[in-house]
Amino acid sequence: MRDPDNSAVRNPAVVVGVPSSVGITATATFFVLSFGFTDDMDLQIDGNAALVTASSSGLGKASARALAREGANVVINGRDADRLADAKADIEADATGEVVTQQGDLTDEDDIEALVETTVDEFGGIDHLVTSAGGPPSGPFLDTDDEDWYQAYDLLVMSVVRLAREAEPHLRESDAGTIVNITSRSVKEAINSLVLSNSVRMSVIGLEKTLSKEFAPDVRTNAVLPGPHETERIEELVNQAVDRGEYDSYEAGLDDWASNPLERVGDPMELGNTVAFLSSPLSGYINGESVLIDGGSTGANL
Image (cartoon, rainbow, N blue to C red; front, side, top):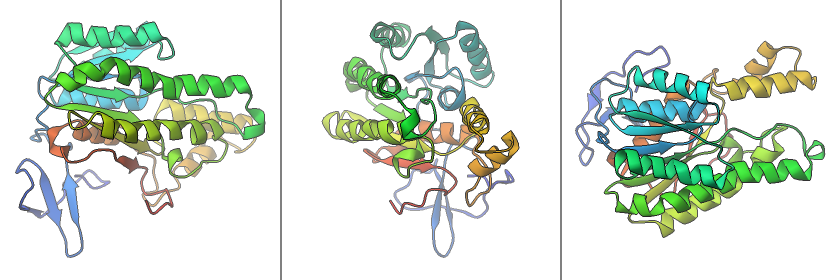
């Protein structure tokens, strides 16, 4: 694990029961588990097959990049062909696994079937499914109509339902099947003017917990709950808030998003590394969990 200034953690210690490839730093009061940040780290997913949705940009792209860098063969997805091609080139720059693109809309059942089929055809199966999707529009409850609710549910929930259903037999056939759902910290603590995200994403967590029981022991299912990271989504939300008059400028809005104990928004690769870890056998006893990645901003104890 690296400090905010990117310096390496000092005084590594070996702890009984932890694989030697995982670094543990000990102090008088806590242990810090380090993963995914060093050149010699081995997550033991080399040659695995991964499908990562909504991965032409943002947190999905960072997750695909982290998996491909660790040697996994990855299918990436997006609606825009040019943007998807650019993402492929970016990911391949430091990938040791193969990267394949599959254009498609996550609200289209046929496109979801094609995503799974492409992964199986290209790589012989699916070991890891990472679900991501663009966020719904921001705004308060009274400015949100029925169509907004239905569209948000179709994008955020039904896409995960359909992906899990299609991928399930292939994940069960894997020796290391995993699902990681990228949702939002809004499932832990509601965020102002994000009524759709606050409400609809809760369904993904209920589904994740259910699959962690129904698909086990063949498949582990977890979720990550990101806070603000430096993605186009944050730019979009801040600009929308500026247009509504909530902030005087983009800079003022971004400063508000960075109001956490670390005093910054996240680097997408910090989330991507966590997704890769949860997809690896090094996290083999983690199942049915929702991991906050928000710089400590959420006030909930659990």
